[in-house]
Image 1 (cartoon, rainbow, N blue to C red):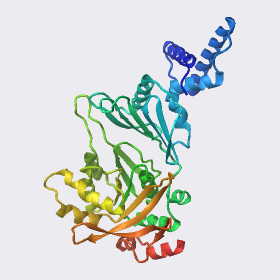
Image 2 (image 1 turned 90 degrees about the vertical axis):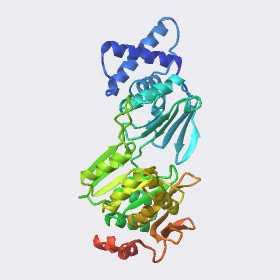
Image 3 (image 1 turned 90 degrees about the horizontal axis):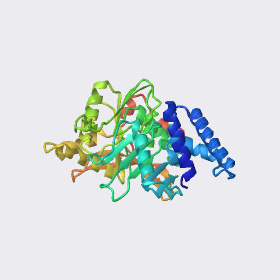
Image 4 (image 1 turned 180 degrees about the vertical axis):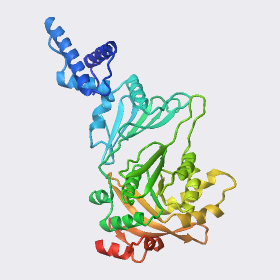
Length: 411
């Protein structure tokens, strides 16, 4: 599906009229549609006067023109389609979407300039940029969707654009139970764990629903708690009463002004957090998070990993990137004592996102690695509680939560 030459011409004529009139259509869709219909009608009347039939469908042409002027042009229908979870552009003729975790090639055909114009429009509100000196960019769109762009010569030929749409369909653990991601018993356990102030690590491969799970867990936080979130780009959208959201900042054209994730974690501790949340740990900021958790601030974060055990192993490795004076003798026991729970998610071959296991650190083994004990594991495709397995109950008791009674009530 390519914008026809006629619609492209109409769009340019409307854009020229907008410039002449000095109006702003970006916040007024009704005015944009009126301008579009006026221009389409003028074109049709001109063709009829020359004995020719109208060459566009008025309603469809108006929709395309309005999308080009106020939205994101040809991809706006994909953004409006609630069944589409993600959109990525490998090249002007290779536009893909994902629905229910399964990718498909669309019939949408763009030009190189269309792709550049789309990126420029999406970045305009974020204050971020992409150019030869900064060939990657992460940004949040106004609706909360996440944008990532890479340009040549980092990519072979075309601009690579990825939009991970923000969905509000999952707001809490009950929504995840309804979708089949976890059982009611596991949800009750996680709810109790959050209210008890456990430090929770959400792990899983790419697109397995880690951020969605993190948001659902944060929906269990007590109303009086103050939450500070730290992210590369804004993705979490919390309904909590007291939330401060922080995101990183790219360096400016002179190379200054950058604000890293490590800096944000340190600054967040000055904001009186009752709960510190790091959207994703990838590098040395993991050390700052561990230090914060070790000081008694309850926290949560996500991490890419293939299992709960791999997540803990990775969290023991990443802090070593912070410098030579950091070694495993400090990191491993700190991870073992600070992390209370690991919730591991997976993406099935059918696109279903599920909780694969819930585990907790069980000390340090003879090989100097964090031992792992499963609390919930999949058996026959169903997430089941393992008898007698549970993290340290002291935090539950301090919060006045009877964990056994909670699990028994929903078993």
